[in-house]
Every structure is written in C-alpha cells, then in structure tokens.
Amino acid sequence: MENSKLWKSLNLGDTNSEMIDDIVCEKYYLSLTPSKLSSKLSVPTDEKDFTEIRSIQGLKTVKQFFWIKERASVKVLNKTYWYMSCNNCNKISSENFGDIYQCVFCKCVDAKVIPR
Image (cartoon, rainbow, N blue to C red; front, side):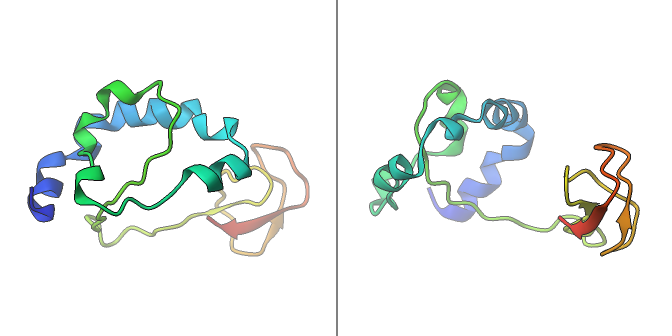
C-alpha cells in the first residue's frame, strides 16, 4: 500500500489510542538492559518486514521492540509544543522560565521552571 494511503487509512489516534496507552503504561521497555537493547534493535531493510500499525491488537503482551515509521502533522497551529514544568517532578507550572518556586505537586521548595 502506498505510504500516503496507509497513513490516511490508519487513523491511529482515533482507533488505537486506548490500546497504545495501555502498552505505554506497561513500560515493557524497562525490563531490558541497555546491552540487550543494542543487540536486539536493528533497522528493518526490506519492505516485507513492515507491518501496518492497525495489526497491533494482539501485541499487548509481547515483549519485543518495534521500529515505527510514522509521519506527524500539525493540526492545531496556535498550540505550543512545550509547557513550563517543575524540574523535579515534570508537572506543569504557570511560572516563567528559569524562576525558582515551590512546586504545588511535589512540594519541592527550590524547584526551577524548565520547558518540557
């Protein structure tokens, strides 16, 4: 299938968002050490090695790494790509960049505001 047709037909965010959230929350990647990561990951070289993302349904419990080729597009142009956050807990802050403040989430008294 041609790439542009594939991406238009996937609607990844609409059709699989709940399942992808589950997979990400399970944090399977934490069980692997860096040495295992480097020995197991390689870029697929042949088109037949690619699988459409919509076939992800049965992969929730598979402990395997995948290369994902994707194309992102901006749908809301007036929205920023970052937010100011606490350098300790990464929760959002309404303070200005570089300010030192007491974080209301982690209660750190000398939290610094950083972009995230």
